[in-house]
Image (tube, rainbow, N blue to C red; front, side):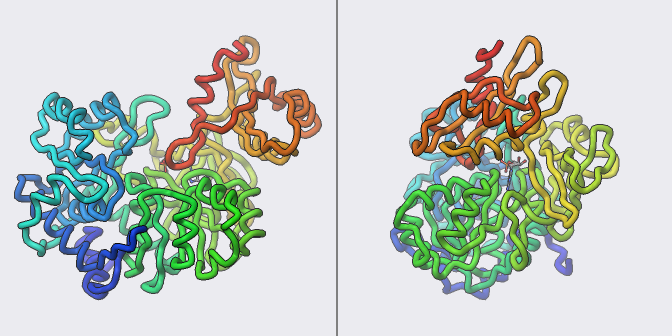
Length: 507
Ligand code: AMP
């Protein structure tokens, strides 16, 4: 690192200068925003927030729909040294109450429609400033900042200074504020940029939300460090994506983006003729999707693995074999290891807890020093909470979340092992295996199945097929059928919802 300013925007600024006239993004309605447009807008917003009294290190909480102006707001926070705190647009009153009390922001920015809900919360928590920003760019934030200056000197930030605060989804216990530093984001973006050979000729299809690591740091980091462009959609719409893909060279998505594309008969080789890279992450990509995608398009999707706490940890190679069902190799500068129950490092091929160490790993949980200490080992590795395995040749595979591990009659069962087998049975579209309370076994295995509609499926058929494939203690006690699996906005199957739904099934 030769530059002493670790402010992420300081490193983006080179591209803003050399590509001023070039489109940074083009919306679905074909409206172009040049690098200069976003540079000026974000400078105006940084000036505006600063004039409002927002200080370096203050949090700016943002619950808005995706828009070019929301991107400028994120960049304004980086420039000003304010801590960007994005909130999922789906959060409701009680969740927002917690986030605002915990993050204690100086400013909240929300959609005009949420003012009624936010107003009393700001009052309750003594937050002085409520600004609005709507999906179409209207609202008080942009209107009131129009007269502000279009220059803003990037604030100096050190390695460990916070750039962003993102909360974990909190499926177990209270959500935790994840403190990400400028250096976390910078080093990871540099590493991905190199690993995936981003360059100024790239055009990224951006259909991900920008309140989550994937769309916010991975996608924008690669584009803004390389001087690339984006085709910018407010969300994933299959037809809109198919229309724009021929104008793009890279797409990043969650697995559901890929299954939805495959569901469309308009999606073929011609649509992807200019694409050089498809990236998938945030949830496991089924081998079946990987294979079907390759057959349809000739592209092998590059799967990578990361989490909010760590940014990206591993990636399948750009050149070299991308293996279905694996998340590839540790990225340069990231140490990945698998450990057993007493913390001993396991040999290749053995399943255990995945731990990571590197400049990508977050600074700690906001206001939770004990929780932070609990999740780090004495030698500085972060325990991801994922179960994984590393092959002899270094490919990492995720077997599931540690908390998804089922312990039935004292024996450990990894849901992923069973899901892979069930997904291969004729008539099964996808499955999720969970543990539910059981008086003899502690937990009993239940397979939740979505049928593909092509073949008759019955619970008996599933269970007898499993009996021929796995040891008896791993055979599900019940198989239940749903029209679809509950998923969050990042495409992750919500097993906590399934466990709650079926908790009395065998009790
Ligand atoms: P989040 O912090 O919301 O990004 O969630 C991170 C979690 O998503 C990880 O700890 C993994 O459990 C899961 N995850 C992310 N990428 C993958 C992947 N490629 N395959 C399997 N699980 C993944």
